[in-house]
Amino acid sequence: MPESGPTRTQGHISPAAQAAAPAPALPSAPTAASASTPVSAPAPSPVAPPAAARRAGLLVTLVLGGLTALPPLSMDMYLPALPQVTGALHAPAATVQLTLTACLAGMALGQLVVGPMSDRWGRRRPLLAGMLVYIVATAVCALAPTIELLIAFRLLQGLAGAAGIVIARAVVRDLYDGVEMARFFSTLMLISGAAPIVAPLVGGQILQVTDWRGVFHVLTVVGVLLTLVVWRWLHETLPPERRHGGGVGTALRTMRGLLADRVFTGYMLAGSLAFAALFAYIAASPFVVQEIYGASPQTFSLLFGLNSIGLVAVGQINGKVLVGRVSLDKVLGFGLAVIAAAALALLLLTTGVFGEAGLVPVAAGLFVLMSAMGLAMPNTNAQALMRTPHAAGSASALLGTSSFLIGAVASPLVGIAGEATAVPMAVVQLVCALGAIACFLGLCRPWRRAPEGAHASAR
Image (cartoon, rainbow, N blue to C red; front, side):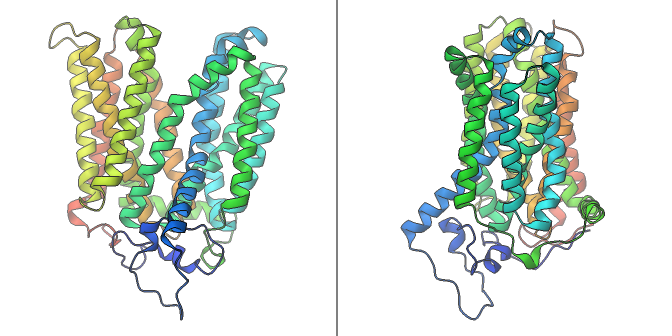
């Protein structure tokens, strides 16, 4: 089991950020900077004025939010262009769909590569390298003459874009600890949760003035601007003395050690299974809402947007109201219970237990399920990363890859019974929710551990 480090109080900035304070490290938000943890250095670093600290905290949020929003932008901005790609490259629809699969697979696998790299060489260099590769891959996608080349560079685009996801989480772990980390993850959800809502709308507007290649031109420009922002304002947050040497073997041993931590694995699986329930919703909702319940595309877009707003809003309630007042494990457990209850209600509705259900009750069940994700996802990430200060990059890689892979396995199952029923969606969501609860209770065992931040080992 990984070493858990010294005892820390909830809400304190992490020792890594304190150790890096004399260097030009990325500044933290005011709440983290005001922590009262004793520092053993001869003279503490000067504290920035409140106004400067607020600006620094906003800058951290915007930079890391942009990094986490780039992958969903890359996926969803391209969706309205799929029919055009089919005609322009003379490829069947099933082959064009592989461009989405390739990008998703790249995002999952790329995190396993970039995470250990960031633990060895620091956060800044692997991130800038990944962003540069992302720009090149996206530019080639815009020029791709064949569907095969487009699929290949969409895979490379996903591999490179994964750097933003995994390193953003690792930077948060470097700078924050305890409730401050949970609050910051909830804030990031505001940005990353808005990206899937805005991206298809932006993609549709781009297609009003240009063709599908214009979508990739815009993504290339976004990649260039974000790279410049990272180069200018995102300084190194992992000091050299906390980096890990070695090659692939060392990285694999580090990940094996993380997976040997029963509690870390419990949080990882609980978060991944909750994320799989979300994936099931994304995969099935266009078909369920429009084909089975007869809603128009405009109504579907409205419902999808409302559900995403619910997720973001509850995430903000988690970060601004609950975190620091209620135990992270209690909030997480409540969120998982609500997800399971909503999935059970959807199953009863779709199987006709209450008679023939219309769109309104089904939409209400989906809204509750989606909103509760705002309690589950930030807190599983925070609790898992609090146990891994020594290998935040590798831990972040495992969290992201696990979520993508389990979600990718769960989402095709929603159509297993054909196009006439929404039951498979509800079944997949309920099974994932119950599995998440089982992992949380069976592996994390929150009632037997010390409070968050103490990092007591529990085997």
